[in-house]
Image 1 (cartoon, rainbow, N blue to C red):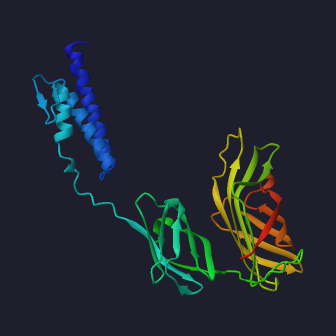
Image 2 (image 1 turned 60 degrees about the horizontal axis):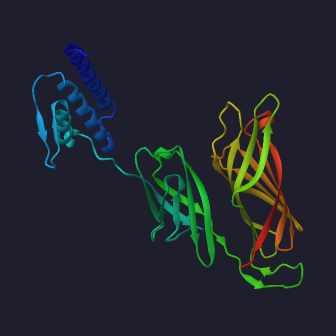
Image 3 (image 1 turned 90 degrees about the vertical axis):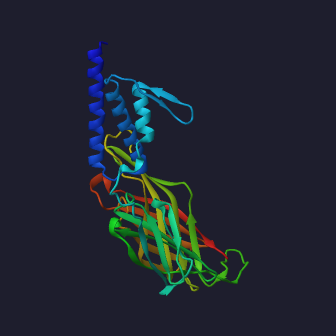
Length: 340
């Protein structure tokens, strides 16, 4: 390469790095610490490129014994000795927070745990039921799921609340209802007899895969909805004539091997019981989906109360699509009685 070509290459390289730095500074006027480090690298490379076409000798010696000369010496000089604080006028990143007050059965309690799984952050309420969870700029989302838990000798709280308008939420008032704990009155050891309890609480806690639902087909991709980590709780009163509370959630994932269209995002589906009916040993419950659920499904649980269990079907029906995508599936279930 001739001297003239070297000068041209050095000049164009320096200009290219300068233009890159100008673009970065104009688009990100308040860089983070890693961005500042990258700016310093680009500036040093640009200076070294221009130094390569300027005649003269430059030797740089660092305190650790390292020496550099020529264009490389200019690179070292700019990178290590140009002040890092010449980016001025940028306010420090301000912490934002999700904060509010939690009422449990109308009362303010201390040590109620409020967590935001997507942020991997949690906080406990103080004596006034107030909590605060910090988040940083860039962590805003359209909605958040807040998990509220509390456990005492008398009752337990385990509730998930979806909060909309995520970027602007700040002061929240959350009202949750505690579930009273069952107490054993008398353990009837007669075969096929249930123990006498103050509350009859039945659970189905499944870890991992629970059920597949297939849909789509002719003219469309073939889809499989997989339900994982299903949690279903049903509590009846001492007479087993009233449903005191019920909760349902599961993780939803959609699979369509070989399909060119994107699948629905994996997400936690939570449901709220809207009505129930008890006729002798027959128990029926209907659940409506949280607005954030994807897809939107209703769930009906129909069970027969047997010895220390509820056994029956869980019918999942999708209604937010059309045709072959609005599936309905019946899944056998068994809920075990929780005996304290």
